[in-house]
Amino acid sequence: MTPPSASPAKQPVYAILGAISISHFLNDIMQSLLLALYPLFKGEFALSFVQIGLITLCFQLTASILQPIVGLITDRRAMPWSLAAGMVCTFTGLIVLSQASSFAHVLLAAALVGLGSSIFHPESSRVARMASGGQHGWAQSIFQVGGNAGAAAGPLLAAWFVLPRGQHSIAWVALAALVGLVIVSYVGRWMRHQHRKARANQSLTPPASISRRQLMILGLLFTLMFSKFFYLSSLNSYLMFFLQHQFHISTLVAQYHLFAFLAAVATGTLLGGAIGDRIGRRRVIWISILGIAPFTLALPYASLQGSLFLSIIIGFMLASAFPAMVVYAQELFPGRVGAISGLFFGLAFGLAGIGAALLGKVADTYGIVTLYHLCSYLPLLGIFALKLPELRPTKSGSDSVDMMNGVDMK
Image: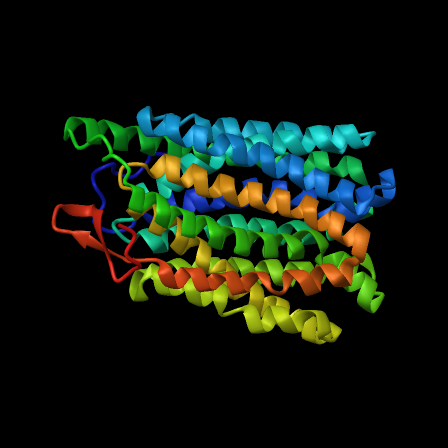
């Protein structure tokens, strides 16, 4: 395959955006098997909810710790091969998972899959911005929706393929990494052309220093991330168990409900970035987090059908915030795309992992229903989004911004 022209894009480069979205789909469908197979491993190794949370914690923390470091390194030096390296790590993790004979082996597999994620995400998010043609939110959504679609398909793949055939069939799923390697090799060639063009035009400039005000705004974004990903973790890790406890449904039916929720997350991710390009990222952020509070408060009291309806609404609205948050932060810190992408994707993984472990302890101690009552209040932290300033492009370039209409942080 020949990469498209590497000249500065006036329109989105959809061939590259499509390729990076597909590779994100393949990467995350392999990762999501870990989550979808929790009931299998819980029964196989007699795991408690705390141990289930520790699997998630091992995966998420491995992913989160390295992502900002990878981003910082690739801000200074282009590493197109890192996309392929991430695929190799994920492949290895799934092979280990398919042969796991103890809880320790499952933790090792989770760590390898997390390592693959930490390498893959920062650079692929940079690719999305490079190929955006100025439509940064839309490009970020295209990239992220591939991952969310892969995560949504994971439970179906587990239900239709892995569960009927057993743990060893996970090795067949790992072959998707070989397809991913071909795709990211194509993307890597395009990236090399882009960097050569940038060097020829002498368009690489060092990033500006970071101000105290920027750090305070970043703190607000972290608070919103905490609210969003702790609540998402309660659904990702424990929704199936909650539904089985409340309504006495089978694991297969519970996985269909999880798929519906994750599909709504994928749809919200796709639309959130485009809406943010049109109406402003700040507005999308606060509506999508604070706006779901009535639905999360109602979820613990709903019927089975009501739970399905509410989880779809919650997944759609809450997911629409993340593309807007990533692009908002990239615009807040121009010239630091890799570091910011790695920080936010890493924080997303880390918060979800910590949340899974802590919420697992709550579920073991007080019960799964109490867990959902407590978590239903988390979206109320979305009120902090009202303190975010509007970011407006300056005349010096699209990557520079002024901060307007926000709280005075001087």
